[in-house]
Amino acid sequence: MYKIKKAEQLSANSYLMDVEAPRVAKHCQPGQFVIVKMDEKGERIPLTICDYDRNKGTVTIVFQPVGASTQKFVHLGQGDSFRDFTGPLGCPSELLEEDTEALKEKKILFVGGGVGAAPIYPQVKWMHEHGVGVDVIIGAKTKDLLILEEEMKAVAENYYPCTDDGSYGFGGMVTARMEELAAEGKQYDVCVIIGPMIMMKFGVLTAKKIGIPQCIVSMNPIMVDGTGMCGACRVLVDGKVKFACVDGPEFDGYGVDFDSAMKRQTMYKDKEQRKLLKLQEGDTHHGGCGQCGGEE
Image (tube, rainbow, N blue to C red; front, side, top):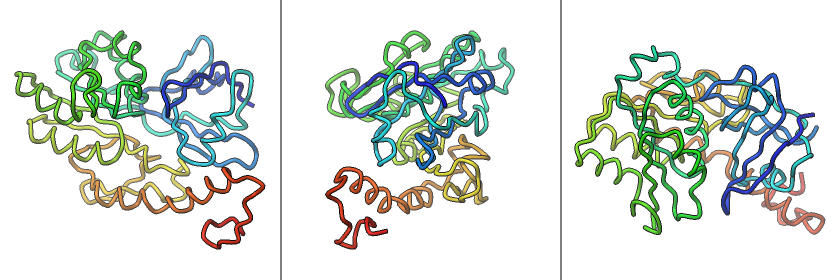
């Protein structure tokens, strides 16, 4: 069992937990993820590592309650435990493999949308600890949905918050902020974009438009099993089949076929919504409608 040492709500739709997992904390790197399972019959949920403390033996995860399993996570608190907490899985960020002195010479931009701020944070923190200054754009629909603001400000050279409704920071999409920075004369060698699939698609198009030579995206939104066995996270990169969980989750953004990836992402929506409905209705759910899978 893996004890939850800290549990807090970051925003209306996102939650943070510090989980006691010494082995994972000892070996994990920014860009990797864990598989979390609430109980013996629980669903396997892949979650990107947001932070880690090797001395305390804890790993920080951030999640949004979008399905039945993550809805159950919300009711867990400090002192509760997960049945399984497996990792680290996936490949670390490719930027970590580069020579640190060479990284210091590059202009790097991180762009995150919503809960995408969580996997971006450990990478930016690693850069800061190794003397690499980077710029960060984080977007959300409203100010109240921005997460990890103070943490990001502490490690980013320049932090640019964006809100769709203009309630805070730059008023508009992260892509518009990217173009504005380019218009101001900012030039970048590398852009790392993590967030919802549609946001990454247009972020990549914008990066290409403003002339950023290298673009990296994380395909963690399409992961299901997390071990390469289910095949759900197949993604085409430069026309070749890759698996987000074992070959990634990070890939060359300019090579990713986002349209096919987004189509694949919708394959499990119906089943996910059926499980959520069954959870919400509890004992009153009899499945007689034949539409929700409750009779199975």
